[in-house]
Amino acid sequence: MEEIQKTRELLLEKLETLEEKRLILRAPELRALYGKIKDQPEDQRSAYGQAINQLKQDLENIVSDIGQTTIDNRHPIDVTAPFDVNAALPELLPTENGTIHPITAEIEKITDIFYRMGFEVSESREIDDEYHMFTSLNFPEGHPARDDYDTFMTEEGFVAPAHTSTMQNRIIKARKEKLENGESIAVLAVDRVFRNEDLDARHEHTFHQAEGIYVGKNITVGNLVATLKTFLTTYFGKEVQTKITPFYFPFTEPSFEFSLSCPFCEDGEECRVCSSERWIELLGCGMIHPNVLKEAGIDPEKYTGFAWGCGIERLVMMRYNIEDIRHFNSGKLAFLRQFK
Ligand code: DAH
Image 1: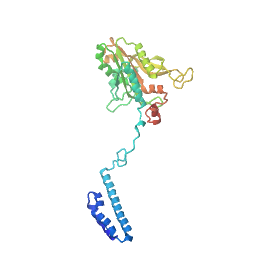
Image 2 (image 1 turned 45 degrees about the vertical axis):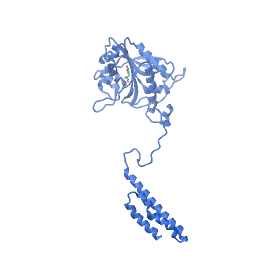
Image 3 (image 1 turned 30 degrees about the horizontal axis):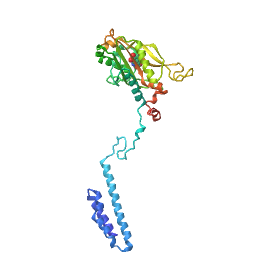
Image 4 (image 1 turned 180 degrees about the vertical axis):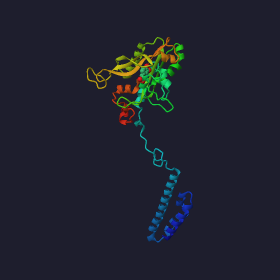
């Protein structure tokens, strides 16, 4: 037993000098001890064997503890990491739990319908300037109508667009040649927009709009109504009645508010969605103002056009009878999973 104790001390000393610590478990001194079991008196052999095993076990423990320390040293803890880099890998949720966000899915359906109707589909932008937000859209400087589009600004004076109409000037200007070649301009621009809003079930500070623009020869309000009606009938999958009422936007003349017959109304029954008014205001639209066409380099004597801007969340809420716009950004899985 004394021998084992001596070997223990020797091996511990040796361990200090070894670079590859695990080699201590294969040290000849340790192996030699095993060879000596048979030399022990019979009644002590078992205890002797156990003592060697204990020594080996202790060495194993020391080696694996050192190994742990070395790994820790190689990966210092990064307190800014999203999870402990030294911990076991987190278990990821299985992919079948993920879904496309309902707004993304509906944008695909909406753009698909317009694409099939001959519209090009483009994106808007999420940062813009005063010229595109107001001036190019016939908002005179200091005009009170600018206040209806109260949004966020950067310190450098850039604007987080309050509507996708901010794209009208660019879209028309870039396609001037089409008109000269006898074609029409037909574009749908979709993106997020921002407003300084008090939040409630119907208002969000960030939401999506789809801006439709059509310019060509002899275009009238009749074309505008027919286009929107065709879209809505396809999107809701059933015939809808539509109504236009006069409104004011600086960038259209005449301007309208476009309503559709409430798709949730059952014959004569009380309806929570439209408060039994049977109509729901859906979007703003009108014939593009001559000044907007002129600003984009188009002769309003030769060409006319229509435009509209539609809130996507509102449309989706109507389609699926969703009562609160805030669900969309809430990250509530129970809500999102219904759209799988
Ligand atoms: N930009 C308007 C809004 O967000 C909606 C709108 C109205 C867009 C008339 C248009 C239009 O293109 O012609 O309130």
